[in-house]
Length: 137
Image (cartoon, rainbow, N blue to C red; front, side, top):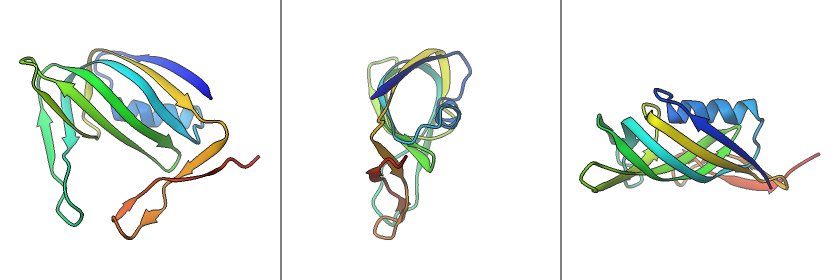
């Protein structure tokens, strides 16, 4: 495994930067090892059952990033985030564009060098789901 470390600065969109980073470093099988920091604005896709319409919630307040987990590959990213509000209440969901860095985000990203991730369509879920295969070449 190779590792990458990066610090994001205020105003950066967390998902957009992770997409850019995945492309720039040609990550074929990436994963989030750790992330700490804060957001000034968050937009999350909330959990739902298969077949239900997607629900998004927006939060315009400073929040601490408690965790960020997921996978990164050229076909797409799948990331979940947990955030703490001012009163300590926690919220979480699927990371989508619109999550803006407040003061910082310190990320360590792992790159699995023996495998490659792809995201073919899965008719059972209606989403592009992770497929893991050997890395060619």
